[in-house]
Length: 271
Image 1 (tube, helix red, strand yellow):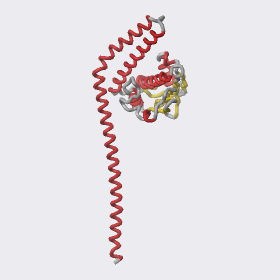
Image 2: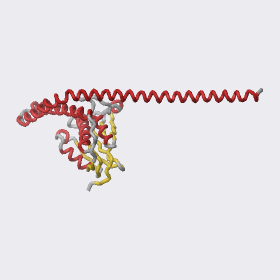
Image 3: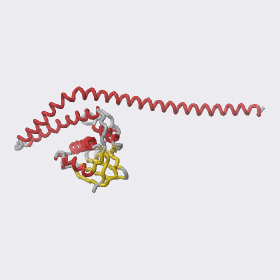
Image 4: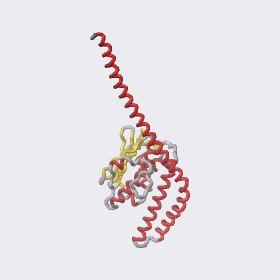
């Protein structure tokens, strides 16, 4: 009787094990399907946001750029004409011009984000390039900057697209220092080469970000600023990915933020 029941017991045990494995496999497939569904929903939501951005840009960019350009030009003329005016007057004119330029940059971010430009790569001497970009910056930002340029090599980059990314990061650092106070604000711009990568880093001692905010900075239309549409850092990330690079962010609330643009090295050392 025992020998007769033994095959049945073996079949029963095998069936229990097989059922357990099948259930685990089904659970894994369900989890994978749910994850794919979540990713598809996120991509759909992102595409819908991008479509909305494109429609808004097409509608308002032309209507806003002309009057904003007139405001910037007129403010500059007034500043030159009122060189000897009292501080409240010159300060208000500077604030007017600064905010007009912010509006212009928002429109430019909208235009750039709604289009996909194919980068044109060429070797760029990164240390000299950074110095050249900073020579064109406003004096209000330039006096906050300390340079530590040690890369000593070329990077493969589209110089104009890289300028857009670098300018966005630098403007964010300047605004963080502005919130902290002009007297105590400091920005450190550094370059270093690690194997086949070059790290162009912009560090500020502003208010920093919480981890929740840092996790969402690359999300289109997400912004903690009262003035902005949340496209600056997503545009930076897109540009760096087009270069085969990356964007790294280190931030601590109340201490400051470091944003590093990672670029492939061209292998040629600067003289």
